[in-house]
Image (tube, rainbow, N blue to C red; front, side, top):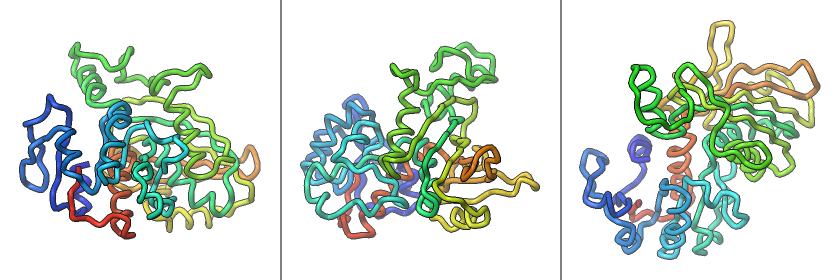
Length: 326
């Protein structure tokens, strides 16, 4: 998030770096200077305009209401608030208009949820097509970077490649392997990650869309990939599909397979766009399309989308920056 704030030149007069008490006194680097880390109580008392949360669901449930009560707009990257009926789940290019002054006038309305990484890139690709053709059903298989699990998982993969026996994030080796499990299994046999994609897609785009997902961890860094099979209510034109995607904000169309041009995690790393390619008609049934969608899960899948929400609020006058960001 610090990198994205810098890269996008977000208007920050004062940055409050906030963490648990054990980190107080350390520093983070922002715009060429060292910023001391402060605790939660001190941060609430400072009354920041915007609080960017990426500290896990339990922390968000405890502290987000306190920041909101102090006047901050909280943009939360955990799953804690996403499916609560009174909380907005926002991808600015799609539904930023839902963030109204009336909502932000209430403390409960000042908590905004950032969607799951896999959901964000999926709905970014689907939204312009849904508006034109009406999506009825989506079958998505994800190929998710180990960065989605955190540094411990990245270190495990690096250790395996170096022949080092180290700490494990996964019960199996990840290098030269794929693991058909992202997050915990639920009673219905799906994982939490898979059901996040189902429910969040419906909340953001349309509750009538039927979604099924298989989420798989793969030994790559750089971004998540998704094979998407989408059935529409209406017939579509392939040239128009490409035009709609090409013109959609935040989408980079990379679809020239004859010259080996298609999205890959190695191309998306460090980028904010959602890349779409391998576009082709599903010849097995009518009104159905195949897409390959790739995005950096740490950027558009998390930090970038959160900062874009803040940008949307500032641009539309919903937050007047003095500016203090926590």
